Length: 109
Ligand SMILES: [Zn+2]
Image (cartoon, rainbow, N blue to C red; front, side, top):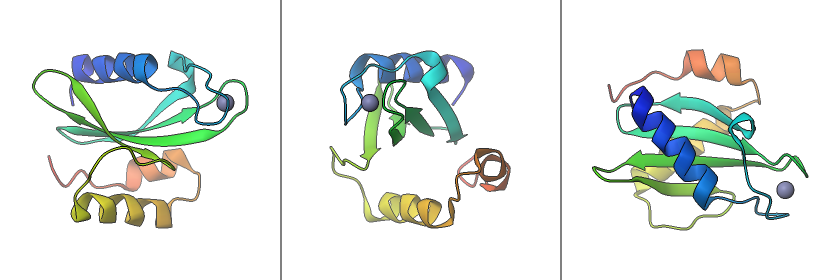
């Protein structure tokens, strides 16, 4: 995911995602990039009002970024492998973004 793609993805998230709890919109500062590969990105969106944190996995398609999964809600069909990836990630995730960012291998690059 290059910078343009990342920027488009964040714009897309801001347009299409709202807090699952209070329906607030997200702004740039509410969205953290946790990890990206060539075509995928994992972001955390924290609601500016109620502080609920939501994880999203985004896949870059040729035209628009597609929001593949939003946790805790799942909107779209995902493959078993993808689900396993996210599960593994969440199992080992202790809230330390800095550590996670440096530990996740970019195996798809
Ligand atoms: Zn909220």
